[in-house]
Image (cartoon, rainbow over all chains, first blue to last red; front, side, top):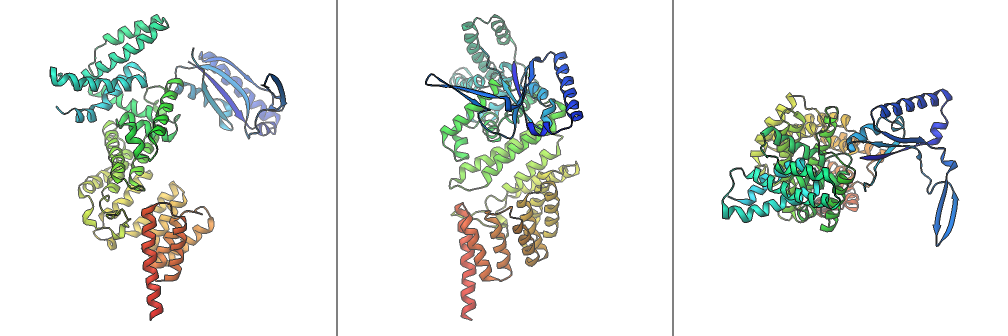
Length: 115
Length: 415
């Protein structure tokens, strides 16, 4: 069963960290990713550029509407994701809680629709 | 053979095992329902089977397998068809221990923290207790359609997010058990807070909560906090006949006719609580139960050991720092050391503003002012409480008190 783990956090908080602190977090992420590769849970995953780089597209009445930024201003922004394979929700949650950002941000765990 | 009592006793066990075998929440529930209907038709005619439990499980299982097979054939899922064939042939002989495990799995799944608490409560009542959707809706004063929708949503999440039908891992057990206890306690308090006219319906929730508490104590006999929770519910429940009058008006602990307290429940609960405390129960339920036990032990209201109750509220506040607990402590201190000390505590609490809009704060102040004979201040506080109170029995209680202090004011002015 596949789950998408959406990583939310406050970008400003991360950007305010020193380079050494950011480096430590990056290292921790590398270790985590390596761990779930080895355990066979990893399918895909990536960090995203800041939300300031985001663009939103909508089509209404056949007309394309392009706007800057995400749909809504929120305190936490989507900063990355993992796509994992887990046997059930409990395993997915156990993996999600090990993501470094879970300690300051939050991880949304969403099952993929099976067809 | 009485099928209704069989249903009450076996529903949970039959469903728990069927669910483990088939892994499908929705289909299992329907199939178990069907199995009981089939029993109702066949047993009076053909005689009751030697092992009714195994008969019900195998009947329910076969119905689920039929459904799943139809689905698997439709999408030509060969491995699933083979799995179902094996499942259908498997024999249902279950040890007592396996049945215990099945029931625990069922309870832990219903109380999974990935589900909203109100959904956990509804699902537990439906699946573990076997209440109908209508009964649960009436218990929680929501329309049947709303409750049905809530149950559909929660079962959909269990299926689509693949919540495991499993015991939590050892390192999560304590945390997950806290969740289960909260659900049981919420069922109880919902039933106990007699805020509606239809008391007999709410009563069923209290009974179910106590039944669940007993079941958990049976399934996990070594856990002292479970025993403390059961003792707490029994102690509160023991006052059910005394705590409201014929028109459902509130009768305070002080004014209750203690002969109406259920001695059977008190006699069961007190040694249960003592053993739980000896075995190390020290959580919120144990503290609340200890407070309830001190009330239960007092022959008359004036015999109540308020000093000890105030100390217990103090400990409870340290564990659970909520302004409501602080208010209760203030009331207990007032009873132990005099209203003026209690009033000072209540003023300090009010200054913090956390209980703004909560009617029990002015009500508690009014009560202490009344005890002090400060009639017009008491009347003013009762009026403040009345402006905030939402439910009828409490409003009537406050109105009665207001009338009492007002008549004192008139007497004074007559003198």
